[in-house]
Image (cartoon, rainbow, N blue to C red; front, side, top):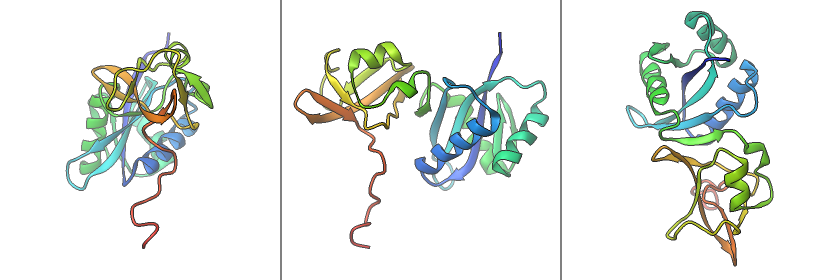
Length: 191
């Protein structure tokens, strides 16, 4: 059985989109299997930015592993468990990301995410993925037979130790994830 460790990486990402790309780059570079858990975390110290945390097979050597990560993503803040490395302000963000892994933050990778395409029932989501609950903003939990239009972009959040998909009404008997894919930046239409 493989022992799992939590890796925190802070590259000073200015948006969740940048952090999502960082997670994908790390997953590919480290050869992580489907089903690993990777999250983004808002870092509020200093200039606000986004760091990431991800579950990785525990390496035999922390320093050797950090070198591999640096070869993939450059000079970033790193933390493996309680072992930080890299520029101090970024290492602090990486340590925070480790401490918040699967406690808070936004899940970008998790078991079953590959199944979240098209329209699915709430039951399908709860039974086929790591998502523990689905909530509709300003309402109760939807019925298990309610349809969720995934828009092929599902980013649940950790709330109270449970992976929670926040949704909003999207039509009669239909909900969609609250986070929209490719949002229009503020002022894009009048810049």
